Image 1 (cartoon, one colour):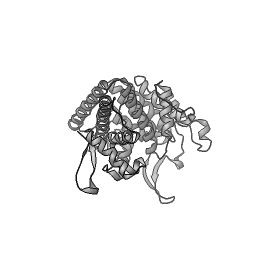
Image 2 (cartoon, helix red, strand yellow):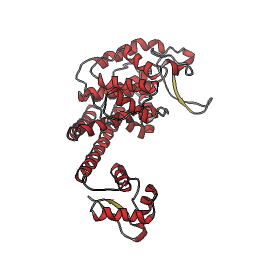
Image 3 (cartoon, helix red, strand yellow):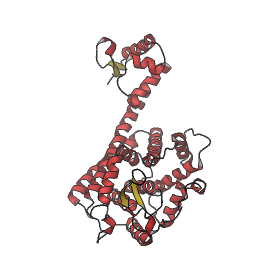
Image 4 (cartoon, helix red, strand yellow):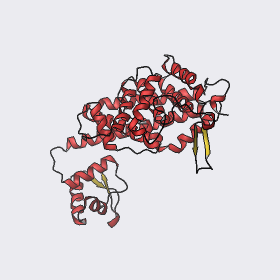
Length: 366
C-alpha cells in the first residue's frame, strides 16, 4: 500500500518535539548564513548568489541524469538578473527556460502557486522544439491509462524493480487542488517545514509525465525563499541532495510505501538542508578569507604561477601541496617551483606542513 492509499491521506503527522527541535537548529543556521552574507560586501554577495543559483540548477538536473552546460546556466542567470559579470553571447533556449523557471520560483516566492504557474514552469522545462523526440504531455497534468500507470522503476527491461506507482491520473485534478490549497494557505506551519512536506507531497502525486523531481525542488526553493523573506539564495539544497542521492531516493521510497507518519522524511530533509546551509557558511568563510588576503597583499607582486596556486589553496586544494605538484600544475621545472614556494614561505604566506626531504608539503600560514 502506498501512502496516498491510506484512509486519512493527506493528513500527515510527525514527532513534533523531534522535528521542531531540529527546525530551530536549521533556522539558527539560516540566520548565521544571512548574517555572514550581509557582512561580505555587495560584489562578493553577488558572486555567492550567482554560484549558489548555478549550483541549484545544475545539480537539480544532474540528479535526474541531465548534464547542463555550466557556463550557459551561469550566463543566463547573469543576463536575467542584470548582474555585472561577463557572460557568453549565445545561450540555448532550453537553458534560458530552466533558469526562468527557477528565477520565477525564487524572485516571486510570495505569489500563489497555481496550476497555471506550474504548467508554465513545465513548458519552460520542456519547450516544444525539445519535445519533438520526447513525445510527452507538456503544460498539463499527465493523462495515463490504467494499463500504462505512472511508475518509478529501475533495472533492465523485463526485470524492472518498481519503486513507486503514482496515483491514477483521473484523481489528479482534485488531488492537486487540495495540494495547492494547502500550500497557498497562510497558517502556522513554518515555511521550512512546509518545504519538506510539499516536496514529498508533490513527487508523490507526480502530476506531470516528466520533470516532477525538478519541479518539486523548484517548489522547495520557493518555500525556502519565502521562509527567509528574501529573493536571494545563498545555498543549494539540490547540490546537497545530489551528494546524498542514494539516501534521498531510499528515504523517499520508504516514506511513500509507509503510513502517514512522515517523521523520518522530515528529519532527513531538515538534516540535508542544514548540511547545505553549513556548507555555504564554510564556503562564505573561505571567500571572506580569500578577499581579505588579496586586500592585505594588494601592493605585493606575485607571479602568475603563485597566483594560480594561491587561488587553488583558497578554493580547496586537493591533497597536499608539494614542490612536485606545484611544478606539474604550473608546467614548470622543479627548481622554479621550489623558488616560488620559498618566496612565499619567506613572505610568511606559506608554511611547512611537515618535514622530511621529498615528502615536504606546504599550506597557507594561519
